[in-house]
Image (tube, rainbow, N blue to C red):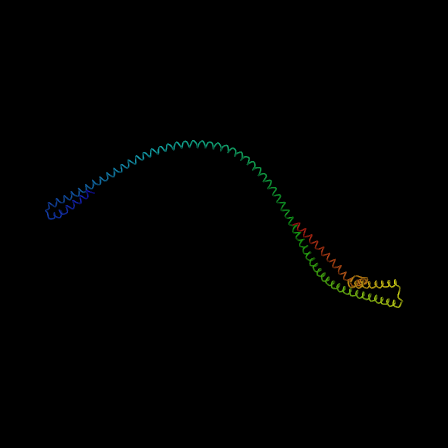
Length: 318
């Protein structure tokens, strides 16, 4: 760089000389031209020297760096060689240990292989036995399936027959129930009618009994009055006779009072029994109707029992 600066200064010094050379002679101009050529060649030589110097410096630096790197690489090589030697030794030791372990494992595996071979042979024998039993079971399964199908067909036939029979019985039961319902309606109607008739007969019977008892009481009173009239016509009796007459009158009065109480309570008397015997002819038709109704009720109960027994049999079959 210093040489370049010096060359520039020389150019600046020659510039006025060139201007003055325009005014000089041709010989001087040639000289100035030669000087310029020399100057340029000098500058080129200086530049080449500078470049060579810089390149030499760079080369020296690079060489020093390369030497240092070479030394470092040699050191690294030595360390790596040492490490490789150690690793090789470790590898040999590890391989020896691995070989020992592998041999031990191979020995154990051979023993296990023998055991497994024995187990496989036993299992194969068991499998052969199981195959034979499976064949026998398949044959028995086929036979049992065949029997089961036959039994299912028979059961289905029986069930169909029973269902048809049950349907017929149900229809019969329904028809019988309808008949029974009609009979019950008739029975209820007849019972209501008979109750009304019985109530009317009871009222008539009670009225007749009351009338008869009243008539008997009146007759007894009249007879008592007649007895009292006859006693007045006769002389007064003695003390004992008078006491006996008084007692007889008291007995008669008690008898009339008891008759009145019986009439108030409406108890059954011989007159009532005669009345009932008299009314038997009118009630005979009612008794026959009641007997018919009782027979119909018994038939209905028998039908209900049959229905319940058939339902129980059907449930047991299901």
